[in-house]
Amino acid sequence: MLNPQNDFEPDFDVEKDCYRRLKSVPYSLPPAEFNWELAAFGYYSKLQKERSDKALAEFEKELQPSNYSQTAAFEELKKLGIYTEKTKYNLEQAEHGFYTKRLKSVRKSRGIDITGRSRQTKRY
Image 1: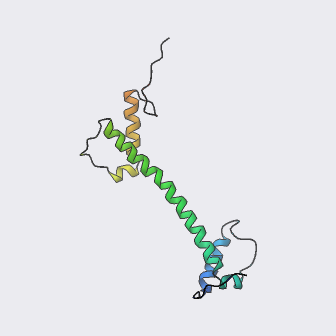
Image 2 (image 1 turned 180 degrees about the vertical axis):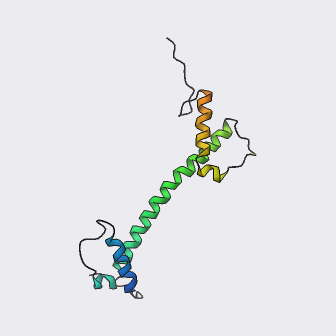
Image 3 (image 1 turned 120 degrees about the horizontal axis):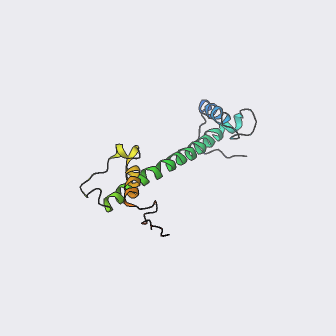
């Protein structure tokens, strides 16, 4: 059986709330009724916290590449001479994908493919 922590006092209202939240998510709990003994050990709140932390980490992970790609696009635009070192990164523009769109447009106008390499013209 589970071992309670020495200073742990269960809050059954919190445990019931966590149980309800977990039940609303398919496959997060086995099909069983609320168990008072598990609740006394903080089982439902622990499980809900793990599920919540995992979801938050995934959400933050999804945000990261977008912000990174905007920053990387801005830096490449500086290397291409579109912006100077004095030009400041605009977070509001970045949130709307401005820098990646601008980089794509510059690459297209200069004949550079998406990987950053110059396109070679085909000779027939």
